[in-house]
Length: 503
Image (tube, rainbow, N blue to C red; front, side):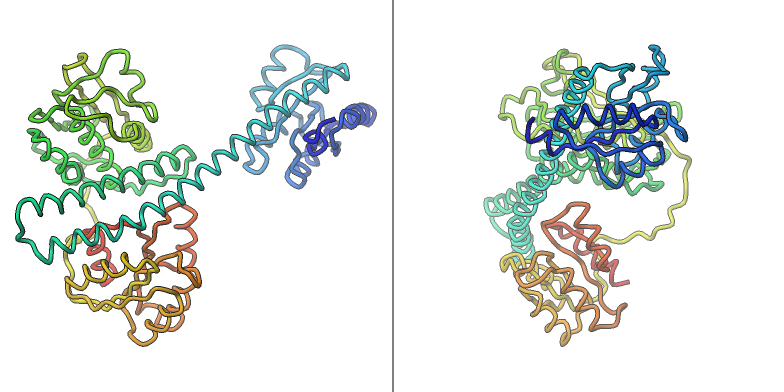
């Protein structure tokens, strides 16, 4: 008898007292803890209440047949991971076994069952269950690690980006070498942010946790945003970029930010694998009520044996002669998954190595529609606002304060929750940028106390943090946070947020 067996719990479901007693006795002697149920309804309730590791389930029950009990167990999020070993003395044909397995059973045995056979099957399923639990635990710890990693990387990136932005604004006329160094800092910090976000996005999509904010949008501005994102790489490598669009606008039902991310990934991929001076083409057209967007290049191409695996996570093909392999091999996998969430497809074609490649995105087209949402100018700040920055990272707080001060805002700084509450009560800020992880209390708790001391509508509180998981966002939303931004935030996003919250 192993320690695992002593800890594992089996729910034995059978309406025949003698049969139930016999199976319980066999399993107890084998070292398992056993609880019992005599009906389908009781089985479902005990499975929810007692969380057994395995349900030994007879098919013929007085109220709900075992097939339906199994289906309900596997469709309930609270019990779907419970193993089900279905048994039957009545349904003993191959179609019956298929029906049981299709209902979600992990195995199906015909009665009568020899005691050794029953115990052997239970042990085999329990081994699989332990492996599955270990994998789920590894997956959970991976997500926790990624969340902490993202936070630790974003925190130093925020002041680096803010400082570089501020230098560009304070002294725009500098020697070419100095400007090149500034732009390099901005490009590489943005690249780091993209890598962090891609890692988190892949994790969220794999768990079904990513949420799209889809609306009826015109394609052209999405392509403009994507090109703007990829332009530094394209310009640095002196690629010739051509864009071909139809005369009439194309409309899609899409999350504009996420879809621009897809096209930007494809453009950056094209730039990465096209030698300097090469060509990149973006084209969009309407084909059979489908919007078809292609990103093609005359770069290194893709060998035939790599075409089928190019979208696999962490897959990387060759590399341009002037570059070593870089990136994590995430972009294409993430892009295909995001396109699939938009009810579309992402495909690749290439004539072979050295002959370039073409990536084609296909989405359902929509008829033109009026957009109701007002358009906000990215840099529009009507009047200087009173802003309080709360962050225990001194560099991050001071560089952000200097950047916002450059645009005419009155900015205060606090490095802990109690100081923030005191400053807010005297200065009455219009907007508070609140870090979540403060040394003396949670930023969310500080935000609640600041809001309690002011007119509810008179103050807007924005979480500005390195934590970006869905759970962190949900907690912030429940606490009344008006906006949730992850570090490092771009100047465009900052000014757009301030303008929107000021209306």
